Length: 402
Image 1 (cartoon, rainbow, N blue to C red):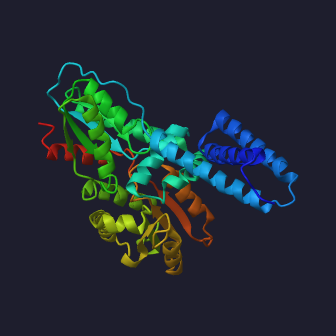
Image 2 (cartoon, rainbow, N blue to C red):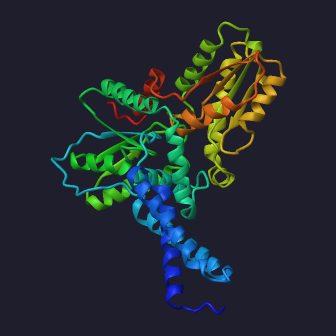
Image 3 (cartoon, rainbow, N blue to C red):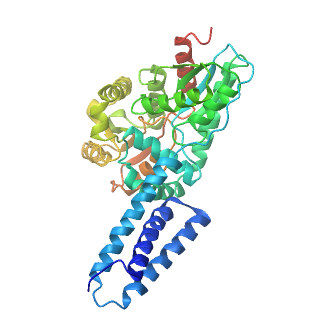
């Protein structure tokens, strides 16, 4: 059979394009829109089956349908990445000019409810930073994975951590400074916060980095802030505080947490795993300084707890996301060394999120540990008083408090 561009062939091509677009949309949307796109996807597949049912030779139309469906899927990916992964912003009409700086607390944060635009924004940050293998062509599937992860996550921890930290800092800063908040991975977004700052008349912005290390997000954050400033036409100055990897207060936070969780047992019976983020090799090769700074932070925690009698060989570093050494390898080593208590510390994470509230607990739960080994988990530094002290110290270093 010769497959030309007849009436049925045009229908087949159109059906393939629609199917590909619906497949991508059903992975991105949620709620009613997800149900609608999934139902339409099923209808288009049924229509395809009926369209080729009469044909004796089915291989060629099936291949054409699959190729065109893939094209429709990719076109949807291009559209989504180009137009939908952005925060909504409005007009900027500055009020009376304020001479004092505005303080913008920048944290990783997290989405607490799945929304397609918020998810695409979060994935765009990851894609631009080169993380988690997020690419333009797999964005719908990554959105689908994110939606599933958020369903099984304790969202209250994320909400309370952000609110508590903001409130504690606001109280410490008093009425003299206006504090704003923005997150990398969830609302309030960077663009929205900077827009509010400029509308309130501030021409100097101090970005208070609640980050262990700045990379690989520094360029992404800079671009987002500068784009809003350029759009506003305001001659604004932006300063960034130093990240927190070398602040002793946060080392003390983890030291105190480990001592508190293991005070009833001999330090020689304790194994500690310091867990870091799973950035890929390309990112690590691009930002070796960030890798070294993270390693220094872990070494400082290790040295601090060794002073309390914990054994060096029973303090391991592990990573998520396929980065080696993995968490399972570190735990196996510690179990073989004869420990009776395992402490897993999310030392490389600044605030609660999908990794610490869903992925990491899931890995721990699935571990086949001996019955005599007790496991405890210490989460990110979150909103602790020691973190507040560290952030205020960073502001003082920039002479903002004077």
